[in-house]
Image 1 (cartoon, rainbow, N blue to C red):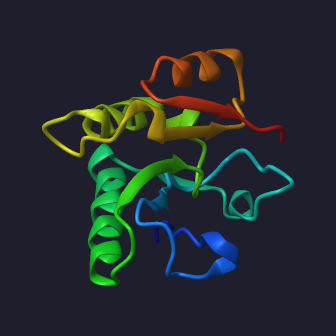
Image 2: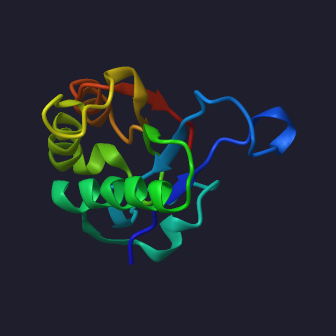
Length: 141
């Protein structure tokens, strides 16, 4: 089971009728489970089951776009890799997914609107994430 979350904006004290330029965010997973065992995250308790393919990562974004439109929410403008799994441990598939997300002929997200959150289990893993177009945010375990 893969976890992804559509996050609608709630500016002006949580009132939905707000700024016409409001945007929605999707929080996507890069793995089913995780092997890092971070204290702040329950996902590590289940262990790593498998890496998601780039197609499975992109399917989360496509589903969130559709869900936002169906619910009358502002359009999706941000993708954050802060769901289940450690993106640095699945760098190849995350990199391939991000390439599709920022491709103007595909998803057409701005590079500044794609954020990869990582605990960077090693310097090599952090370097792999930094090699991905988008923004990297390191979190302490």
